[in-house]
Length: 328
Image (tube, rainbow, N blue to C red; front, side, top):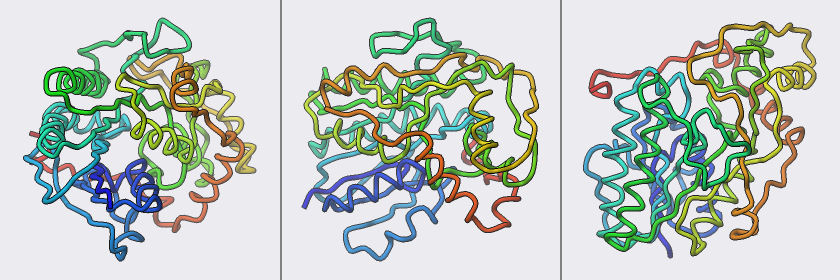
């Protein structure tokens, strides 16, 4: 039986990857320090004989006993509300955490896939964004802690591949959504749905003309799965190329939820990207992958998940215990 370590395994994406690899017959070890992850996301897997959970911070030394065939490194804050509150931890998990896991992959002879992001393109001057584009990133801006952590991840991963011969894969993830997202984590979809369910007006930053491209979680997991098992070692964009303005998306949410809220506008945060759309030519040609779930279908599943949350979660303000240990 193949054994796989999934860091960030209690997070939104990580927990869905745990589900997928359990389904595929792997022995899954999920690792998470639960700063932004939620144990509820993997509670259903706890009784499974081929599932283990390690409560651990990957910026510390990482040890896993026995055989290890694959590593998926998904441990990182991924929303602005998180990485602006814990900027140093965000940089550390991208640098020290990735270094530790690459060392583990080298020691075990395991293949490692790291989760990069469309944020490495910054506020792009090229549209849509292909893997050959180097990006337009403000290294000293507030978002730089996340952008540069991911850019460094890619660099050290390729260094381990070239110098040590470690089998590596790099996925550049574009906006992904679905069940298990945190309702108040600051990202567009849970923010809009949460406001609609609470009867609040929907908040759009800037004039709403900025664009995003949203990929449903099932499609994202399928792309990651295919990339891990492929022979391709360079970065691959995995995302949905169907682009929409934030203003139009807010109107879609109002229609979906059947509410009568207004859209209100607030100043745009510094360095917020104006355009985000993946060029997925490589994913199509190399992996035979493209998204299958339409936005209308995916949003209905996501809305159904959120509206069935307990009332106390719907109205609870986002709070995370970012202890001083994790701010260092």
